[in-house]
Length: 156
Image (tube, rainbow, N blue to C red):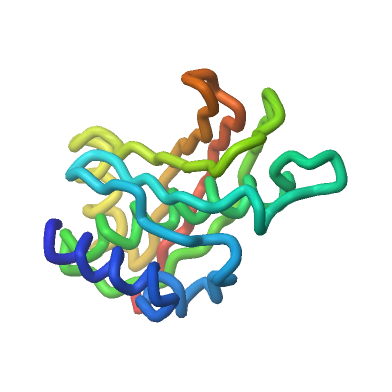
């Protein structure tokens, strides 16, 4: 996971990782990989490049970053499992709880091992699987954006 995280980090910062190429990440949106442990992926974006007419973060940028955090975590999980697959967001719900006025970070936690094992078994057996992930953006210790997305994965 550490090696994959380093690849992801360098690629995100340069806009050249498979992560960015697969999504066409706009350079203004995704500035850096803020953190990645074995359990959580956090992506960071500057508010200045994602500002709306109210001088707060644009909702589309917030939604994009929470979606990308889930997609990126899933990308890392698939590499851990040594599985080549396509990741597609099937549906999602995004709740905007408060305005975001500063640079923002979206974090997505890894599902528990039992869910990952079930996901892997289904994917290897059927050639496709679904996984629900949750991401959040916090500001000043309070949740500002809450996201739940269902991703569909097809073997390549």
